[in-house]
Image (cartoon, rainbow, N blue to C red; front, top):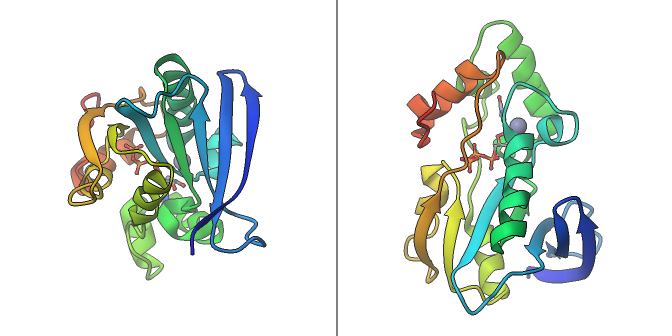
Length: 196
Ligand SMILES: Nc1nc2c(ncn2[C@@H]2O[C@H](COP(=O)(O)OP(=O)(O)OP(=O)(O)O)[C@@H](O)[C@H]2O)c(=O)[nH]1
Ligand SMILES: [Zn+2]
């Protein structure tokens, strides 16, 4: 059973957040995290971001994707407007860091972000956002705005019991490396991107 294993306040460059660790087992070293900005009003519509882990982009500033910039932009947005980031341990669209690096090796040979996963015998996107919905319910969040460009994240809220009011776009300017990655997101996954 999913449980809040720990909770703590953390000051950041974007202000104070309360962090909750969710997992089924206490010994889980990769729990999902929820970062709630200090000024969040749970009685109103809550701004929410579902964010999947990307160690290469968020920690090591990889230019192959826009995950690090999206995470920073989401933290800034939540600190200014109230809200929470649900940080999901779904590295590499849930194929894990080893497979993501294998996929990147194939991308060096010319395969794109989707083809590389498929070539490895893995799904193009192995994620499911039900766990994020469950975490929202455990925190008693009932009505939200969602910061995303990803239609699957919006779909995960249909018939969930949680009311989705607005999608807030979270679009980052492309760089010299990630342009084709972003256009594949738009063309294959149907991401709601206007700048690519
Ligand atoms: N397998 C694989 N995963 C990637 C690649 N590039 C980025 N990722 C992963 O893609 C995921 C991106 O997740 P999110 O930041 O939640 O974003 P999203 O699904 O693009 O949707 P948005 O809400 O619009 O940002 C992360 O888990 C990254 O690790 C890639 O080339 N291959
Ligand atoms: Zn990334």
